[in-house]
Image 1: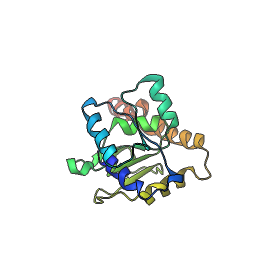
Image 2: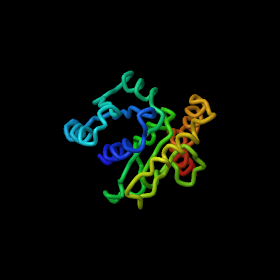
Image 3: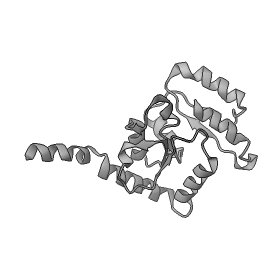
Length: 173
């Protein structure tokens, strides 16, 4: 829900000419009415699209239109400091650069430029930092190349063959 408040703050920073539609793919039905109330309270109905639960080709279509994936925000409030989420892996499989609060396990000790790790100490997310991250990725680099590089990283690091190799090596020894 912190993302809705963040978008409300951004509304006052981003000019109408730079308006962006933010998509949310929601699967928790109990959250929809409270999120809709927050969206209305922050006056950002024109920038948020509520998609509801999606699978298959509908979900793929939304991923194909996306340019960034949000792994987490403010998880330190729940005493989570290192993430090991399916969402991070799904975003990499789709070739999306990501944003997270704190550390994501697959990026530990990795030379990986497609994740913006926000400090868990910051209570307010700096929009300029996110815009600079986005620009550093997509300015001058074709989107398909970005997707390909992210997917290649995923194949080398989170593919079943890569993750099971240490187990296989141990069993062989």
